[in-house]
Image 1 (tube, rainbow over the protein chains, first blue to last red):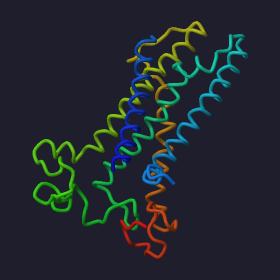
Image 2 (cartoon, helix red, strand yellow):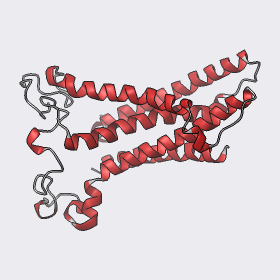
Image 3 (cartoon, each protein chain N blue to C red):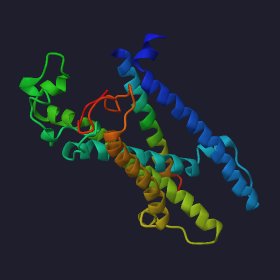
Image 4 (cartoon, rainbow over the protein chains, first blue to last red):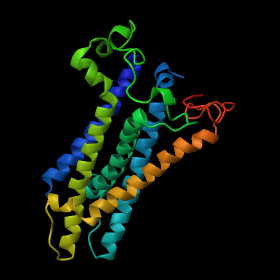
Length: 30
Length: 224
């Protein structure tokens, strides 16, 4: 299960990074 | 095949095609953008500039939010609504949040149940809704991101045509924002509705998204 947990963390990290970048871009670039 | 790849085949395969298509979107999007620039006597921009721009991220977030809304709604709706004969639905006698015994909670937990399923109190309440909570959070964050990035793109267009820019609260009431939003929602809802009803009468041998080939059409909630 450790490898599955690693995959779970990679997916969540990827999603959070994308969301954080897009929100920061939208807030800072106006 | 290495154990990691075998154990995570689905998430690896979809993660790979996600990245490949995101790159494809970036390349074709930059080309489209530069085509527009050329038509308006503007300077072309680099791929690096494009993938860090609001134009690219508004498009990415617009699609993310609709996908996460689709799953969020489906997770929520399937607690309460059923589709007779569909393997996407649960059985009619299990409508609702079900008993602690059916959900293997608290006293009914197994030794290897997750700790928060055994814990009781607020931990079990949070864990019992964690999938819906996280999917909802991603949907709201991506819809917010779409609106923030979409406003920048909208205002840039306005400035290009010597028109007034709009604030964020105004942008979320514009036809541009709702057109971008609803054109994605409609396709998600159609796809998910068709999946629920087509899986009653159609089969794919070997897929858990289908009933077993020999399962009767009236059989609900079987997978194979």
